[in-house]
Length: 98
Image (cartoon, rainbow, N blue to C red):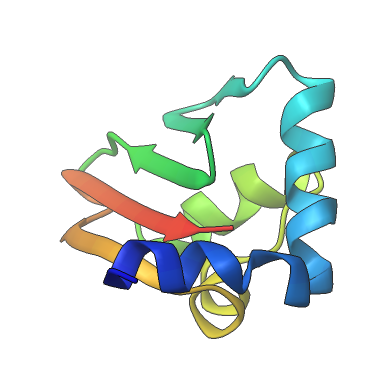
């Protein structure tokens, strides 16, 4: 069993996965709100924020909250992080496995 298969096998153990998947499916798997784009691709939630000079993680959190998704900190603590890079004042990306 490869690493990805191990992660995928634990999906059903996380009760928050269903909540995130439900919100994303209600919106067709893709949401664009403000400077934040949220995409559910199979079992990977991709959050991209193309911000401005004065943006910080709170700007991303407000956009996530507007569509009933948890804040970045909660997502990081709840799901395996596959990729996180950048900063919200330019370009920020977070990919987690739900």
